[in-house]
Image (cartoon, rainbow, N blue to C red; front, top):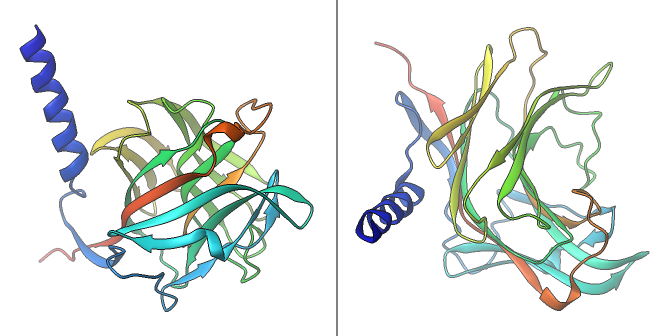
Length: 247
């Protein structure tokens, strides 16, 4: 039994490392974070103050092939904590989005990989987006589950297809994916489909990629675990694939 358990663990680890995009998609844009600093030709910083933290460019670093978002106890503006985030300068639409990352933080942090239009303000204003695609939203009070969702923002705000996904600890690396077509939005964890949402009747528009972590009360969090600070969220890569034309 122990041998079987070990084999299953190794199989899961291999899946996390080598999860592939759906068949028929080709790489169009990516950042493997191989340099020594954030590529500012590709990214803007998230710079808003929201919930319990202010997001600072100084908390964004690139080191050892990873994008690191640092989470700190420090005063900035009217907040007692600082988080971080980056937003792609390029906008995308239909295709397959993927990121591999881990969360190393105690309770009090809302970490996300998602797509929505960016209005240039450095924050989450919704005047420039039709949809918001939440590939993963985790409240670090529980690192064994996360949420997926789809929001329609223009006109009356409507949420579609929210689901709580159970997973092995998010303190380990996992691959999170989203296939966006005119008909559906599908979410993946380590190559496995976890949710499908009907998007055929929804408006469609251009989307930017967001990688962020902010201090927050979400998930019924009563306070930030300051004993676990500084914390971090580490992204190994982010990629965008487009569907290959059929011959």
